[in-house]
Length: 135
Image (tube, one colour):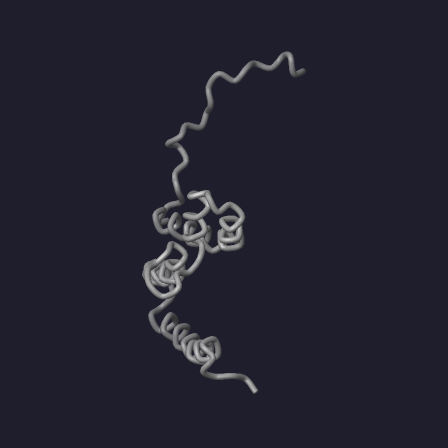
């Protein structure tokens, strides 16, 4: 069969509503996770430098403000990244526990996994906050 013998496509087989998410996925949580990741990657663009190059552009100023931290007062979109991650962890935890339980994990297995992971939290916090240094 050659290209001239093919019939033109007059109708697509996939409709807009046919693409359904995987069963059991919380689409809103996935969308919010995507937004938070996009905000983190948008920091790499260094929009404050672009705004400095175009001082009369209101659009560049708004983008630059929302991709930098405020000094002491107020809040920009960039300041919501860490709280957004904390929120996502809190929302995802019940889904994770339910998934592990559905796969046959018992309560004590989940508890022991948590108990083994929690002791690492304090040293990581102390080191990252500068309260503890490695000699």
